[in-house]
Length: 135
Image (cartoon, rainbow, N blue to C red; front, side):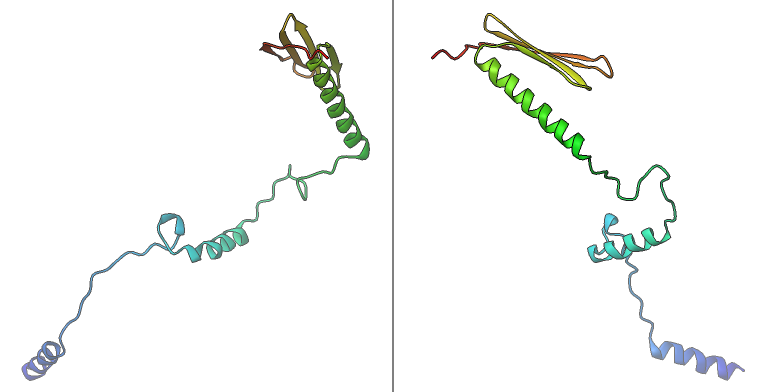
């Protein structure tokens, strides 16, 4: 028995023992891992996610109707014309479903009053030094 132990100990010493340092290598690219793992990890996460938002529609975007687009375009055009008229020294106002704009020129001080009709919030913008175009 002693002989077998000596032979086994001799074989262990003769083969030598090799060891190396253990180095932690993260997998997730957010924590220093290989960036090529990102799409794989995201795909796995999305495959496991079975939560569906009940409030979300299929695409999240609803195309406006032709009437809504025409109304928006017309409001934009009227507002642009109103602001162009102010440059010529004219005053004016515009009221839509969502807001009311009142523009007043008080001796070179342009005052723009914007009221959100839905919330009642009012914003006032004043611009000093307005000189109407004279031809």
